[in-house]
Each structure stands twice: as structure tokens, then as C-alpha cells.
Image 1 (cartoon, helix red, strand yellow):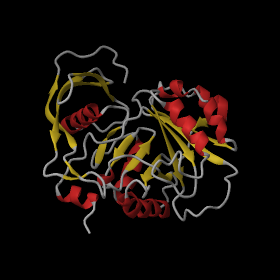
Image 2 (cartoon, helix red, strand yellow):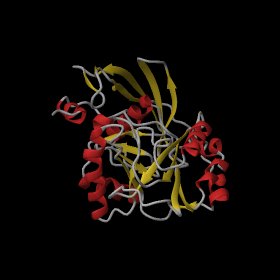
Image 3 (cartoon, rainbow, N blue to C red):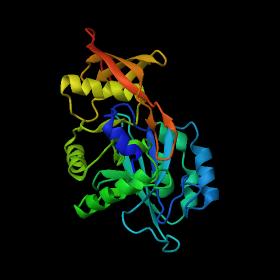
Image 4 (cartoon, rainbow, N blue to C red):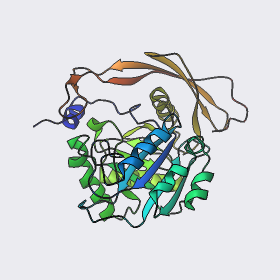
Length: 314
């Protein structure tokens, strides 16, 4: 039986500009099964889940549940859980971690501040600290959202763990089921599709060395989708792989055409023209969904500007 992932691969659907958008990710450990809307259909208190969803509205924070790869049977209440928060904007990308016995304390966080890149409330409320371990590899495995995420994501997460990638977690939802397995890498916030173990291992090595692997990359979650495509196009045009040096500083226009200005920390600027295309022939965006023509981000032109920015802060 054909799946949405199989069809997307066969049609060579491009990955660039398809990542979820979030300046800040708040990740809460919650073992056991997850429903389609995991914050309110898991073993996390649904009242807490609804309150967190409401509090995160319009803050730039995206909340997701995570669990260690492996069997997901209910083992009873979790005495203590991991919590992570990561801000992905270049120039201020960071990852903090904490342990908590009371997930209700999450409601005391200043989510607007976290969304703006200020970790102080996380550190004060949860006694969080900068994360010093391996970068996080978050593999989407929520089969209640799409069966491809479970069929392809869970084996990938297990293989990464077996290979010694200690920062591997399963995560509830990253969007783009048809690009499964999908992986979010933190702290820098780049999302990858059609991922394989060797490729993710190379991405993780790159993060530890301060470089970004662009092969298989869907984009940086800090930017809206035209910006994601534009930043990757500049990397492709210049061969720039250093992390934390490129920023989307302006996007002009509206769908279906944008002009995106990308700045380098050394002052260089590029103008990138991005057009919204239509993926044809029609295909399911998710297993079991009706045929559709998902939007795609097509880069029309990349041009370095003669003028340079003065003291660009990426």
C-alpha cells in the first residue's frame, strides 16, 4: 500500500522551506501513548495541557512532548521529568534543560519572554541551566498524527540511540508527515526530512563543530517558510556552512512572491526572490487524506547586494 511518504519521494517533492515555524521550543517529557493532539490526549494532565496551549498563543513558543525511544507502555506516574527550552534565532541560539517533579510549574514560565529569547524565567522557575550534553535530535514518531511518523520515525530513533546519540528523543509533532522520518536538531533549530541514521549522525557532528549540514534540510524553524528557503539558498550559493552566521532580516511582499533579505554576520547581504509554487500532480499530504497540491517554496533568484550592512547582529 502506498503511503504519503512513498508518494512524496517518488515525485521528488522538494524539502526546502517546509519546516515548522517556532522561534522557541518548549519540550516536556511525557512517556506512554500520545494521541493526535498530544498535549491534551496523553498521560499529561489534559487540564495542564490546555492551559499551556492557551498560554503559548502568539508568544513564538511551540510546545511538544518528548519521550525516550523504546516501548511506550504506561509505567505509572512519572516522578521526575526532563524539560528543555531552546531558542533558535541566530546570534541568540541557546538550549537550557531542567528536571521537575511538578509540571504545573510550567504555567509560571514567562512564555512571551522565552519566545523573545530570554531564558531567565525557565532558569528561575525550574532551576534550569544551559544544556552541556549532546545536541538534541528530536524524531517525530506520533503515529496518531500519521502512520508514517511511527513506521519510519520510531526505528530511526531506536537506531540513533543504539548508535550512541544520547540526545535522541521521540517528539510528538514536527509537521510534514510526507517527509518522514523528520528530525528537529537543537539548539540551532534546523529540521531534516527523509532522514537516515548516517545522515543524522553527520548533522549532529556538524552541530558540535559549529556547522550546518544542508543536505536533507527543510529549513530553520526560526523563520517563516519563505525565509527558510532563502537562507538555505544563500548557503547553497556561497558554500557557507557555519552555524549562527546567517539571519533573515526582512521579508517584503506577500504570497505568492516574496523578496527576502538575508544578512551574514560579516555584513554581506543577499536579496532572494522566493515564489510559492504548487506541487503537481496532486498527492496526499498525509496518509488517509484527500489528494491535494501542497505549496512549495521555489527560489527564483539569489543576488548579493553591493551595499553591506554595518554591524549586522545575527
